[in-house]
Length: 395
Image 1 (spheres, rainbow, N blue to C red):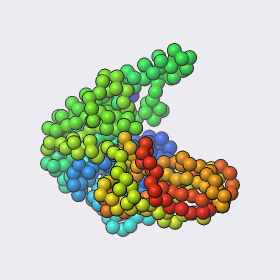
Image 2: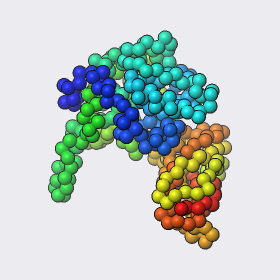
Image 3: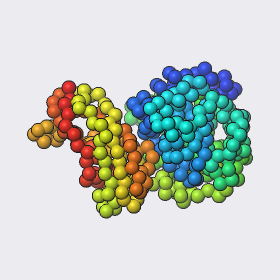
């Protein structure tokens, strides 16, 4: 627990600070939200939670501390009926804005409530509950109430998925080591690693052991592990050393009234090298490519990915599949940019599935006529053969 707990005895004392300024300029994933209006997520921790939601049928899902609503939107997009809850009026308005322009059928699957997730009675049970970056913002008593509340509302086969940041051990033990090593090289790292908002709002940072103990009071089956943005399942895949435990910034957890499918969780958080036969059956097209772009101004381009193979594709390690692009000078054909920005798949694309997505494209630094080739890439393996192509002016 940080020293802030002495100043804020409960999350209610900090309610005024959960405003639009926080959600749009600091809260993790805000850049992607501002680009796509909440319809695309690029934050790995959010994607991990969506992946883990597949451990259950998720006909009815409960998103606790829903914030801007991106996770709720993706769950509804996957077919679930979602109840999204947050006590911040600003968060609720942003979550509702995610539904702007969405099909009526999808909007009807999301119920957004301004309420206290630790005490609200929902009048129904859920197959899935999620708490992403919530528990560190609640006092110990509120966390206990939250877990008990979820336990009451979770079906016997249901799964509770949790992410919290930071791993308290990361700041308490790892950061001082990094400072010492940096000082030996003549470099300075501040003693306090937390941002202004973390210092204010993180009133109950968690350790893996502490989170496990709290969950075990409400659920008979619990699994807690640590990870990092580039390896979110590391602590789930193997036993970590002490240094690895304190050096991982993220904590994930699963809880249920029934035995957990940990092998299934490992598979969901792993993307292996695709066979050549599958790569040839996965295609991409640009739905409405822009006719022109402005130098150095990124643009969100709608694309459609079709997976006609027999295997799922995802942006999980060790070989994530992402959307990228090449730029060529037109008409000379000379390569202008080979390594384009990468856009993660917000959810896996299942065999036989077609998915409409947004990918971020950064135009070249010089004005001129160019050919843009958008395609999929599997990191550490290959670029896909299929490409979506258009010619445009960069001003």
